[in-house]
View (cartoon, protein in one colour):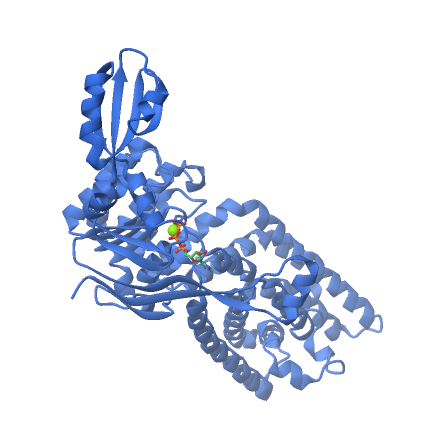
Length: 263
Length: 324
Ligand SMILES: Nc1ncnc2c1ncn2[C@@H]1O[C@H](COP(=O)(O)OP(=O)(O)OP(=O)(O)O)[C@@H](O)[C@H]1O
Ligand SMILES: [Mg+2]
C-alpha cells in the first residue's frame, strides 16, 4: 500500500513542477492579508498603555497563522469538480487504487512546495517580530495532534465540496459559503477569544471551522489548556470521524450518479 | 460460465430539459423537468474466453456506454453484468487488475508528463513484477515502434503516438479482458494496420478476451469473426460477420478499363454507374446479374480489363443500419 502511495506522490510532484509559475503566485498572496490583519488588530486594540502580553499574543497569533494556515490548507474542490464534470475521474476509477489518494498526494506535495518556498519569508518576518513571538513549549505535542486533525477536516470538507459536482453543475456556490463561514468562525480574521460578543461561542464550538485553524493556533500559544483542551479535542475528533463517514457515503452515492462523460 | 455475461442490461442517463432563452432558464430553476436518455435499453450477450468480438453501431448507439458498464465505470440502471465472475461496478481491485479499457477519445495518461511516468505508475499500482514489466514494456515498445516518444510530454505527442502509448499503458498489467473503444480512431492507414496486427497477436498470444468498437469496418472485418450490432440501445444482430455480408451484400462492383470512349448513358443501361473517369468505370450491379453484365461488357464494349469485386463493407453495414 505504501509503495503505491509513494509512487502517486512522486507522480504528483513531477506534475506540480509543470505549474511552478502559478504556484509561485499562490504562495505569496496569503502573506499580505494576514500581515494586514495583524496590523489592523494591533492598532484597533491600541497597546500604547503597555499590555505587552496581549500584544505579543496578537503578533504571535497572526505570525503562526501564516504557517499553520498553510499546513492545514486544501484548495482542490474546483479542480475535483471539473474532473467529475469532464469525466476525467474515469482514468482513476479504472486503476486499482482509491481515487482520494491522488488528491491527498497532490495536497501534501503542494504544501511541502509552498512551505519550502515561503521559508525565507517566514525567517525574515520572524526576525522583525522576534521580540513579540512566543509559543507554549509544553503544548507542542497536543498542538501537533490538533494540527493533524485540522488538516484532515480541512481536506475532507474541501473534498466533499468537490464531490458535490456529482449532483450540481457548479461547486462555486457552496465553496463561497464555506469560505465565508471559514473566515468568520475559524479564527482567520480574529483570534476566537475576541469574538464571543459577536458570535455565540456555542456556535463556533459546534461548527468545524474552529478545529481547522483557531484551535491548533490557540493550543500552540497556550491559550487552550486543561478542561477546554480536552473538550476541543473531543469535538475535533467527532468532526474527523463524522466527515470520514460522510465522505464514504457521498463517494459511493456519487459513483452511482457518475455519468463517465466523454469518450 | 462465460467470461462476459450481460443480462438485460439497461443504462438510462437522467438529464434535465434545458429550455431555451432567458425566460426558459429562469423557469427551469423553479421547475426542472427531467427525462431519461435510454443509452442502453435491454442488452444481453455472452462472450467466451479468447473471443475477439466487434461491437458496432452508428453514433449514439450505446457502445461506449456498454463498455463503461462492463469496466465498472457506470452503474447499470437495470440488469446484470458479470465479467470474470465479478460484478464490475463493485470495482474490486482484484477485478480491475484483470481488465483494461482503452478509449480512443479519452486520454488516460498524465497529460503533462512523459508517457513513461504513467507506465511506471501502472507498474506499481497493478503490482507488476519488475522483470515482467521490463519484458512487457520492451515488447510493446518495439511492436508499436515508440522508442522515441516515451520521454516526451504526452500533450506534445501526435494523436497516433498518444494512442500507441495509451495502449501500452493499458497492457502493462497483461489484462485478461480488454475493452477497446475506437482504438484506431485518427490513425493513418499504416498505423491502423499495425494496430490491428497487434490486437490480433495479443488476442492469440494471451488468449485474451477482447471487445472492440470501431467505425472503420476494415478493423472489424479483419479482426472479428463475431460481431454484435447495436442501435438505439438495442441489439440488432449477434453472429458471424459473414452472415451480414451474405445477407446484405446485394450488389457487386464491376470495374472496367476501356480502350475506346463509351458514353455514360450507354453504361447506365447496364446498371448504376458509381464512377466514370475514362478509361476507368465502376458499376454497381445486383448480385444475380453481375455475371451477365460482365459477359456483355467483354463482348459488346471496348473493354481491355475487367474486375468483379465484393461490395464495400462500409456500404453493406450502412445498408444494414438503414434496413433495421
Ligand atoms: N453522460 C451522459 N449523460 C447523458 N447522456 C449520455 C451520456 N453519455 C452518453 N449519453 C447518450 O447516450 C447515448 C449513447 O451514447 P454512447 O456514447 O454509448 O454511444 P456510442 O455508441 O458510443 O456512440 P459513438 O459511436 O458516437 O461513440 C447517446 O444518445 C448519448 O447522447
Ligand atoms: Mg462511443
